[in-house]
Image (cartoon, rainbow, N blue to C red):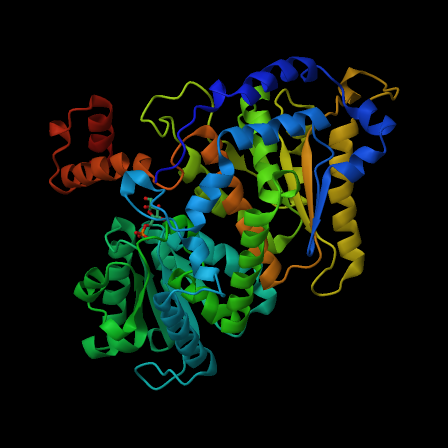
Length: 522
Ligand code: F6P
């Protein structure tokens, strides 16, 4: 059965939200907040180690109940069940969407179990040094060669869980930029480096080209047979990996039903597994599973991903905000935003609905941000006093991992203070002049988590995965394909040919032709 195909703007709830928005748009809600002390208790969700405070939003109970009604009218519950039960909800690619099955420990598919076992065994050998390189030395450095989902998730997680890391150094080569590759090579010794070539398709231009460069570099010092000790692959295209020269036992399979941007839970997470050990990797998966269960079972008004998605829809489609920021008050999470950018924008950057019709309402939000408190000294001015409304998620932890409470108190005081200042502004206060006036009324969600553990990180990532799914369902789009990235790839192939054959004059687009001529003058 296919996903419901309901135009959200035609629902009763949407129409009611439009009317409701007219009442809400000019309201300064700071007063409501001050008068109604129960508001902060009402608009919050406590779940395991997570505390979500969404009271600093431009909503009332009516807003929330209309948004929940919208989710019901577009049959969100049915869509959630369809995803988890493995229906082919990625209709344009005729695929199931089952990244959640990778962490469903009560019901692991045999092939998932087998791959996890293989990852466990292999990562243990790398960590304990029993896997030796071609000169008999243990591995010290791991290079993950992959791009997009085959890079961003593993890098984000290995950075986020640095506290739990072992002695292995992990490097990521994603960009085809040869200078970047050369800089990485400077740090590596072929005798002690393991290369993990990660590509679901095993056809991605950047990954295959970079892997070939690295193989040639390796072969300057070693022989073809040594490749088996130093190159492994993660792919759904076993033949492609074998053709590249990687032996079958060195291939970690992944399934067709795992989308690239949701694949860090699969064998794509091999570098994570090596960096933090299998136990921690498993804990992360279990954290995600806990969130999956919350998402599946909890009523919409108490459901963290659903509430975050509905709030985002409220701003995107009614206030017409274009972007939303994510600011994590933890340096460990400095790669979270690039990861979310792919997850959210590759999924929901669509303008054709599930009926194949052009959409006349806004879909995919632009996600941006950086870590706090650094961001405060960069773009927060615009959040506070700019002309744009930018809903922002604040993420922080109650405990510092190294126990440096002095710094941590300052860090988190900034988190709490910023959400308050954004909300209250200088409302009802005397200010010297217009330049010092802060309108306030700026929406934020505060996600306060006990501690940055592998388990909690797993839950946090799953929150955002489910949030984007809910939004895609409401917008009536297919979130799990990415046809939009294909055209650029095809054009690039032709452009490369023109460069290699020095054929700029044959390129039809005159602007591109001029650029190529200039480029080739070098
Ligand atoms: O071009 C986009 C994309 O297909 C992403 O969806 C994917 O994560 C990335 O390229 C890498 O793909 P692969 O893992 O097949 O190399």
